[in-house]
Image (cartoon, rainbow, N blue to C red; front, side, top):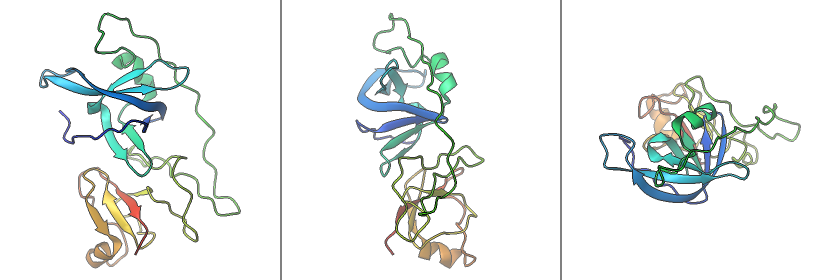
Length: 200
């Protein structure tokens, strides 16, 4: 049973751990996937050239309102096994096959005009911004939505939030606790600090 009541909005992009899946077109309640629930919430994700996916909310690990993206805990290769191509409201209809799109080219180093590529996945496998993140702020090498591990150096004075519960903390408060200029321990186990607001 999910700990968080996710608010899924139509039009948001959806990403598995290793690639994009499409856009949320519908949210609906369907039969429970667990014996502990009476019903489950699902989102219908559509992408041109692929079957529609019915993904339960229990698969969500994070939602970024800044990037309008929903992140899932599964890999693209798991979709057929999980049966997401089958509409749970029509159990008699056979599931279509899902074929992952080939990966795009790897991110490159910053170019001459200072463009910063998206941060790579951290060792824990937690998500970091993808190409849809906004361009860097003038004179800064970070973007709203960038994520940092506890112990990373705080890059700019700004407001950061816990990626699990959205708890917000300004870098001034962090520096009072950690004069060495590094991010404090995460607010939740496995959580990261996400740059939310660059205003001082």
